[in-house]
Length: 309
Image 1 (cartoon, rainbow, N blue to C red):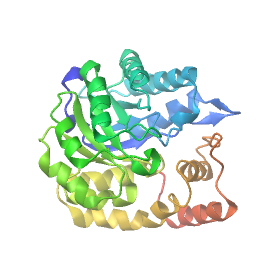
Image 2 (cartoon, rainbow, N blue to C red):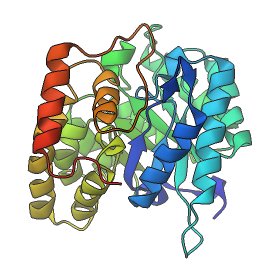
Image 3 (tube, helix red, strand yellow):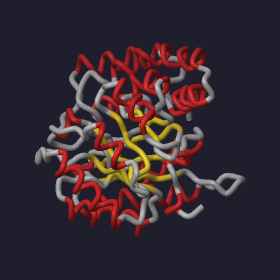
Image 4 (cartoon, rainbow, N blue to C red):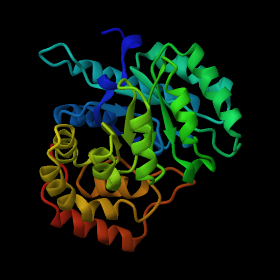
């Protein structure tokens, strides 16, 4: 299928918000290949490099290219019997409209399937400013766009009525909801067309969000528990919420521990504990405290197969 023809339906399911692995302070491209293979072998729908979990704000332009190229190259190797491959949605959003457009075109040139565009942070635009920003990007984008609503990091959210209006643009095919509002997410799912996907952007709330209409997740925990979290999503998609709840409850202690400090410090520590060796977070983030590290070790030991290779 041509990438321009992708709709929200093709993007449904479990996506991993990839961490950016570092070794001696540099991007570890070899480890990126391992992480993409790990996701693919667990039947994850796709991966999302350069989001909040990927520490995009801490990478320079050359490093962005290294990360995107490594992810796409690794994803392209994982073609299944039906000719499908692991999809790649690149985080491209900034608080500069022109720069975001440049990032979108770069992602397209490198072979991405879709892009994730966060609300402009720090600037705090009005709804009209947000409308112009997103439409300016969508009008020239060669790739499908997923909006990213995370007001706690941006200082501004994307109003629900604006999301509904933006969903009518042929290039805007979904939204990642990380605002903690289950009712809002359900209303967006109700008021938009079938080709528009609501992604959960908050792992602990994924089960209730899917119960009210979300059809996918861009997940942090799937960096170490892709099979289990992916199965939970699959159960939700067919309406088997009892089985989904069993997995949610099994993973709840780990989900809680991953939220003890600013993402992605806890997930990176958890991955290192399990032997995945992704390195430290980059300044201005700091490694987790000893207390958080202790909790992570405890819940990883107590959770059944928290990382499945």
